[in-house]
Image (tube, rainbow, N blue to C red; front, side):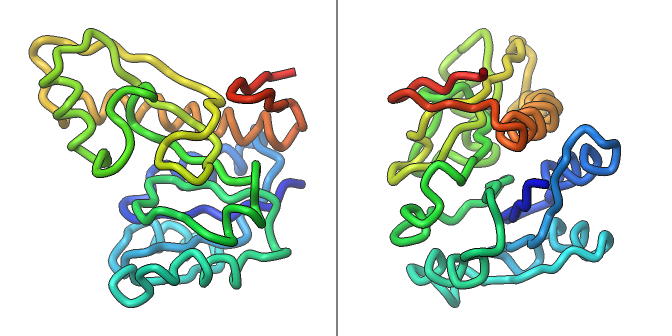
Length: 202
């Protein structure tokens, strides 16, 4: 059984989708730990409701030592770290200790609308402003860059001329709730092979 840690900063709906998929039997995983970088993240409440161990590492308090603290908590305890709307950037030894074992979900089709400062509604505002006809979400491995690791899965949605950023966010979120468990399932079943930038599902 794959042991995972889920890192959240907000509502935790992607965390909930993982929990639901474990409970339905789709995922053969256990969530060992949920970590938030914000005290008031509702994702922590979701974890506590399922008796999952939680930690709050407030970003204002931990700052650049955040990654080192996460490594202290998770080293030797989990097989995979899942960033499910986690806004702090991971760095340092954590990345090398968990190389190829950290995944993130981003609410756009990378390499569009990603990188520094691109999170939350800002992503969807930029997509609408640019006039794209499709957008979506991307699950990718985490490397030393921001949203720059190899892509595992992408899901696409149409962008309509009447869309607000919130409309687009909600439509993409539905696809995030499918894409993230799907990626975790591939990893848990040993079906992922990375060749350079390409991720092959075997």
